[in-house]
Length: 147
Length: 147
Image (cartoon, rainbow over all chains, first blue to last red; front, side, top):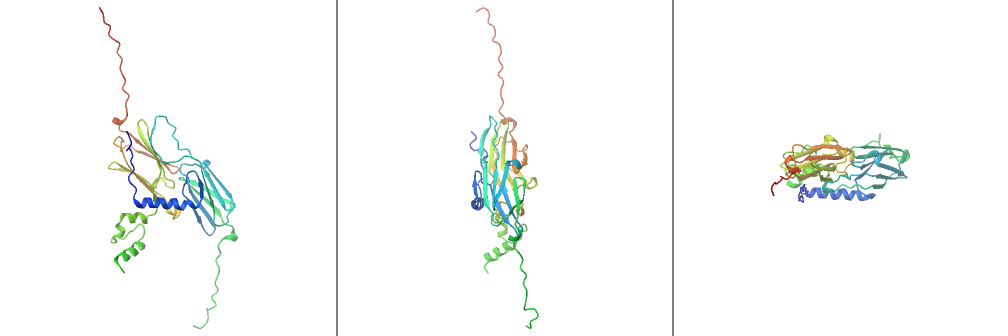
């Protein structure tokens, strides 16, 4: 009876392309279960890992750091559990999921700091001082020479 | 330099949120969407109860002030914006998805709630669309005398 209810508007070609790109970029990390986007940003003094975790609270998430590998495990339950409802779309998954990513630089696990806001998990990890990029001074020997 | 290459250079120079009104490419809505960043369609669950239809969408990273839910000409549009500074270039910066609303929805009574990056949108049915249970009155059978 409601086969056409909430029929989605057709996606623009650029939307489909962008969705494919997001999926492509997220193949770089291993994952099981639901695949939420994950992003690693390497800065001079720290590494920031950002992961989507919509519908998760802090108690639903676990973060493990071993060497330079970070593993995030999450779980959420989206089941409505109501009798008598009619489903028209079920695109959101409710299974447990795990994402593991090897960071490109060494990090100090003891300095890890994580926060969750608006369904986005942000993990900050400091880089050891000896692995941070250093500015090298340049001595200009040509100064004072006659042109 | 050809007109096309000049226009392309102009498009690159044009700030993201201040397109040059004289640039024909800047007026192209498809290119404008591309410049604004990655746009993805969020996954949704839609179910129907006795008196309402409920839509749940994953919008991680969207704050309440970045969420826009509109209804126009029977089309529901959900649009959420993420601060690109927070997530980096490889993450989506915007969600957008549209749905044709069925006639039975009271489009003036939509109620939206955003929590942990998940949108809950409750759309009550019109009163005349809510199934009503008709009480069947049972009258005692009339006694027939003299038979």
